[in-house]
Amino acid sequence: MNPYVAFLYISTVLIWGSTWLAITYQLGHVDPIVSVIYRMLLSSVLLFIFCRLRSIPLRVNSRNHYFLLAQGVSLFGLNYWIIYMAESYLASGIIAVIFSLIVLFNIINSRIFLKRPITPNIALGGLVGLSGICLLFYPELATVGTGNTAMTGFGLALTAVFIASLGNMAATRNGLTGLSVWSINAWGTLYGAIALTIIALFTGTEFTYEYSLSYTASLVYLSIFGTILAFGAYLKLMVLIGPEKAGYGALLIPFVAIILSTIFESYQWTSMAITGFILAGLGNYLVMSRKS
Image (tube, rainbow, N blue to C red):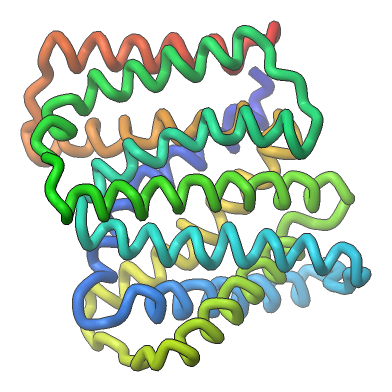
């Protein structure tokens, strides 16, 4: 793998692997949609300032703005709002596992919208990787149950995955136009924030703020690292290697949670978990190999 691609890939996985936990600190007193609005507005302001300071062009023609709007509403707006709501019903680790399904959605949607071929290695690697993730998190998945709360969380997470995949298609298309990644995400986060603000106003959502260190620190972390840096790297990846390969990182993100849990929470490895770890690694090799 190209060293630059490897750096982008690893950075995305490591950052997003930690954001699932950070999101839990955003839940509680502030409505989820309001927390996402704060996050995207802060990200957008910082990105526009960065573009101005670095003289990165921000002017975009009207046709490209339609696709930036599509990316913003789906990837930076609805996707995250629904994810925040899903984490109110299920543990963040379980949501991360469900979100791994974006690998399959990206493979299918890349074929439909971008006319990218589905190679045997990519399809097989995705299935092998998903199997590994299921084995790795089987104990947690087995305890979720089938109650209304669990089913609601699962339904919300699955909806978010589908919307995020559509956003990936728009983001890939935008990246291929030659626009700067920073400019694309500046407009995308702004459109996402505007769309959610309109929804919040129409639904009578109360705009509040939690003046606590945990809420503010997690908001800043999610805005700068989870949105600006991670999405910048991810969009570049989708342009360089395609959304079906870039999306495979979603299968490796839960590993970050497992490793952190091993270090700080004494996570106990089992033979099933080790098998899952190996399968996910094998899947990653198949997807990222040159034959793909």
